[in-house]
Length: 586
Image 1: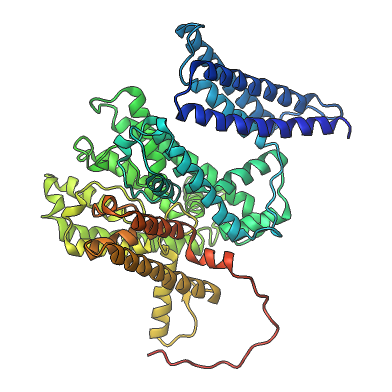
Image 2 (image 1 turned 30 degrees about the horizontal axis):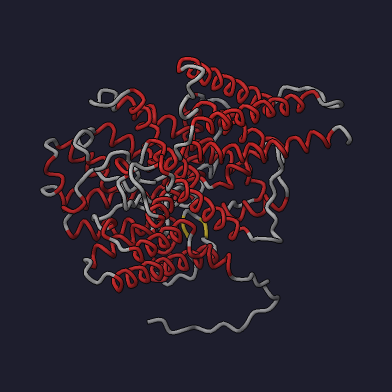
């Protein structure tokens, strides 16, 4: 015990000091500082990294601790190698610029400090204290904290090419964290590369949730999570069994980073010959759009988005991005279940006589079936509608039938909370606008990076309506009965969404009566469903209207039902039931 206490104290100290180091690195990057202060910060960074290496060594040379090769040791080895490589790059740049001249920025060593912080905080226990905050409150507070920090970071001088107000920074941070994509200032011209990196980080954190990162790394190092944390995360992710919580977190991270990496590679290949872009700019473009697409954020480093003249007719790029955001909007668990099902089908096809790959019933879960069928039907309806209404409209500039089909498919898919535009939104026909509003309202699937009321909610409501029309008392599909709690939750989500959107439309119309009502309605639906499409209204909003839209984006991301659950005190079920009464409905 005596030997273990100093190590724990040293580890806690490194976590605190490295967190301070990350903050100092952000300030150093966001502000133009004097040369001597940069040198002081440089020494501070080096001290953090040196102490971190000492702590890491202590982790393996402590008495009574047998040295074993496991995933934690591999993680420590890889991060140590990464830090050493970053230090070599840093000192190479420093020597080339001259020892007497500070290397402006110290980018490599700042990244090394960030890696150090991630490594050290991973070796600490993380526990959600349910006596202090319930799961819904944890979820909401995490998003509010990231939005506030992001707003302050975006206001730093080196993050923008011109000063930005707090309201605009708050709006941009909310849009990024809530993976919406609505912008009040042009991302491409108003923000520097450093500012765009901040936005990229906010999108990634908002798409996955900060608790996902922290909880998984805690499990990765400790090999287990407290009962309270498992129960809280299970409630926030709606895992059917508490034991599936860790598997859920693993699936979320593996699927996210795997698809984003593959998408970035394919995007880079599709723009390799884009004129006027360096290799670094193409790499950043690829990574930024891969993350933005999978997280259904809709942010772009081009002012006109994918409607830019250099990208408008790049059909392979549009297909890659559309497939990426469709995967992101499908839901993490649905994607994992679908991949597992496809792998099993392929194995059965290749090994017909093997008992190991015998038929497995319900390998494709009912959630996956409902989501895939509903998503496919909505995509088909959207494609048919866009091709009908816009064939001689916004699609007319695409000369080939193939080009019209790809552009139409992209236009039909992007309202499912993606937010990218490859057409002129102001030129849309009125029927297309109404169809887009409908698709935005439904949005993506549960446990995904997208928003909206979700495909499963719409499917359950539709099935319930059919069962009532047929005189049935139960909702049945695929030889399964839908639970009453799911039906109640679905209709609560639907009417709460319309309540929030209606309130937003009312407040904005009252504050700015000169605005076109259909544009206001479109903006509020887009904000609630975290889509990011706009009829070029966002930049015309007043300060009050920006706050209203920011609130709608936040509510749409965390769900109004989650807010109610967080605010209202839970009442225990009592062991009695009142007599049932029929209420006149129509």
